[in-house]
Image (cartoon, rainbow, N blue to C red; front, side, top):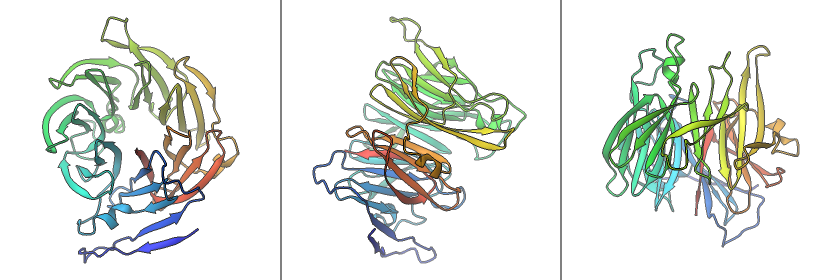
Length: 379
C-alpha cells in the first residue's frame, strides 16, 4: 500500500485539519473506467463535526480519504456535523448534513464547494426535472413525544434557492420519485423513541408540481428506506420498535393498472436495514437487535424484485462477513456488479469500505472515515 499525504494550506487556525490521504488499491488502472469513481460520505459521530467525503478513483486505482478538506481549504468547520446522504444530479454533488442543517453543494467532478442551502434537520435528497427534494424533521434534534410534523423542501438546482415546502408525516426519512409524485417514508422516530407516543406508520404521497400532500398510505411503524424498482413498485423498510415489533420489508404497487393510488401488496417477513436495487435484484443487509441474547443478528441477502422471492441470505460467499462489525451502507456497481459494503466498526473511529465481486468474494478493503454510510457513483 502506498500512502501519500497532501497537507492543504489552511486558514482555519483554530482547527485541527485532517490531511487528505491517498491509498493505492489492488485494482488494474483503467483510464476508460465507467463509472469514473464513487463518492463515500462518512457521517462522523454526532456532535464531533467530523462528516467527511472520500472518493474511490476507479481509473487510477486510488482511495482518496478526506477529499473535501483538500479541495476546500478555506471552508470553516469543513463539511459539518453528521453526513446523512450524498447524491449527484447533473454536474453537481449534493451532501445532506443533518445536524449542520444544510445541503452542501459541490462540483461533481472536483468536489469543490459551490454553496449551501439551509434546511433544518435535513435527512435525504432526490431529484426530478431540475429540482431537488429534501426530507427534513424540521424541529430540534431531540427525542420528544410532542415532536412536530416534518416536511419536504423543494430546491431549484440552478439557483440553489428553496422554492417550495410541504408538510408530511412525523420525522420523514428517505423519499423516492415515481412519475409525477414523491413518496416519503415517515418514521416518527423522535416520538416513538420517547416511549410516550407512537411511531408514524405512513408513506406520504406528494404531488410535486403543486407541492401538495395528496395521500398517506398506511404501511408499517418506523419507516426508513424506500426504493423503486424497474416495474414501478416501491420497496419500503420498517425498523419496527426494536423490541416486540420486528423489522419488515413492504412492497407497494398500484391498486389497479389505471389508478395512481398505491397500496401495500406484499409484506415480506425479512428484516432489512438498507438496500440497493440493480436490475431485478435487491441487495440488502439487516442488523436486528436480539433482546434475549443482547446481540445484533446480521444478514446479507438478495431478493428478486420481479418474483419477490428471496434468492439468498448470504451474498458474501467467502466467509469474510465475520470481519464486518456493523454494516452501515451498501451500493452495487451498475457496470461490473461489484458490491460495496461499509462498516461503522465502533462508531467513533475509522470505518472500513469492503469491495466484493459479483460472486460475493472479497476483492479489497480500505480504511474510510468515521461511520462511512452513503455512496454515489460519478459517471
